[in-house]
Length: 304
Image (cartoon, rainbow, N blue to C red; front, side, top):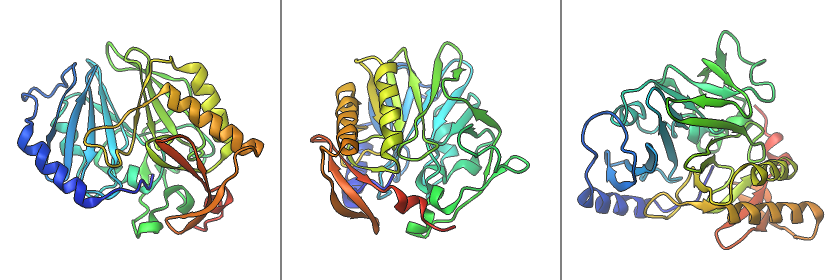
């Protein structure tokens, strides 16, 4: 979350994309091959990725979130619902007529803002989320949502299903694996498509400054990922920073991040005091594309 971007660049980019690209023909099914980005409206552009996958870019929102729609022949999955500044359901409806399940990659406010627009919302069966859900309604704590950092509301979430780590979801001719990957938050999840192969990471990693809640959890998740995904995997993050299209990361970036986290834990990589969104942290370099802000107890200590 909280990727630092330039609003003016997003507005300029929107104009360029709108003039150069047009939407796929109306048929309410995603193309199977990559297509150039096109403008859905003045606030969002859509980029068609391989294998019936769409990236929805929030080009005027300052954090420039990216949501991903993965479609099979019978069902579709949406990773994240955006910050809620603009309706997400009409964007999804323009892309597919299949039933859609929405899974927030984590509970921060800029990823759950549009969940109420959808009837099928799944959360990971991790930590104590299920125990804190009453009559199907879950209310994130302040330190899980962080909306108060930008005066955003903390909305309840109506949960229709619970997902297990390693669970495989059959979309119809396409299987997506759910990976629970603590580190950015305790309940962070990813989508893994082994056929593409592609890993949709949420805020676990993206170009820019990564916000780390627990270095120990981060290393454990990275160790699992390095063993689980192939070296030719394409990593699709949840923020596109200043890129003109959806940025991608690689297995090498995953390995660099594991190396940096391990060195920080071992004390061979020395951090420097830093502040991010007014929160005290320790900053660590990763590689030319990424660096880390380690929050640790500063996040968990926030009061409700």
